[in-house]
Length: 105
Image (tube, rainbow, N blue to C red; front, side, top):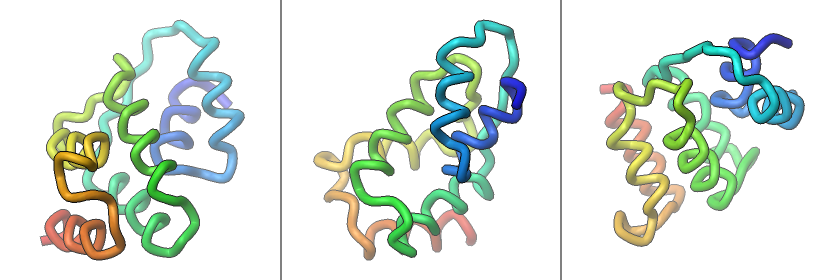
């Protein structure tokens, strides 16, 4: 898996997320990935299905926001809300369901 693939795997909570994280932490090459609303929707759907929990979602948002190689421009407001749940009313099934509806509208 190269760094570009690792970025995509990590930001979509793919099955090889742990391997992708190791690559991201050890590879200093200049590669970038823009997170689309579709990618964010995949991650939110994983939360709604119970595949990941609130902590996973919050930690993911924080990690993604801090990575220089990840362009969060299209979803930065959503990431802010996920990374600061105490300011935004918490991460709940209802709030994430509403967020997903907003993204898809």
